[in-house]
Structure formats: C-alpha cells, structure tokens
Image 1: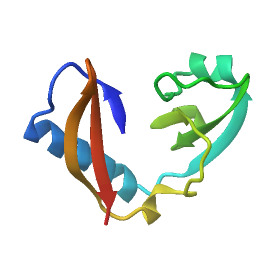
Image 2: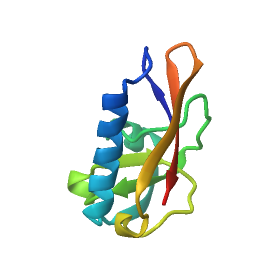
Image 3: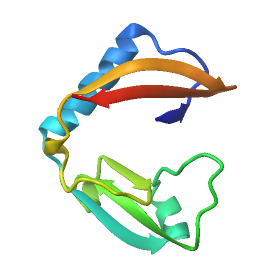
Image 4: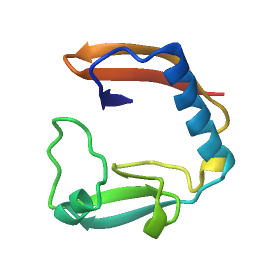
Length: 109
C-alpha cells in the first residue's frame, strides 16, 4: 500500500495502523462495488493509484455502508464481499519509495 507521507512512521504509528485495520476487519463491514463517473468518484473522495490514468467510468469499492463509508477506492478487483473473512492484518515492512511517498508491506494471517 502506497501513501503520501513525509517521514518514516514510528513503531507506535505502525501499531495504530494495524489496530485500525484489524478493528475494521472485526467489524465485518460490507464491501460494495459501484460503477460511476470518474468525476463523481473524485468528488466523494475515492482514493486512486498514483500516476494511473483512469477511464471516464470507474469501479469504486466502498468499505462500509455507501452513505457512511470507511473507505472508497478506485479499483479493478477482485475483492471480498465483507471484511470479516480477511483474517489478521500484520505489517511486515514500511519504507520510502520516493520523495514524500511511503510503502507498507503487509500480510493477512
């Protein structure tokens, strides 16, 4: 998972990320794919891959109920139907991949 951030995450911050992800897995949130216009997806704040060119119509995956989602992302799938089947999330590495961009490597156990 890549994200914009200017510095290395502390051990405490990495622990909080793991805890948050595992909390959302335990909540067994529904995941729903909705096809929509790219402009509409951008307006609602759906996250997209860096430097990727998207068509005018995109798939957006919502984690949680659509009207009060936890996450919305542009994506091509495949995906699960709910978070509860994912198992336990564990971060194995965090590193810089370019100026201001970090990468987390994680596994599901």
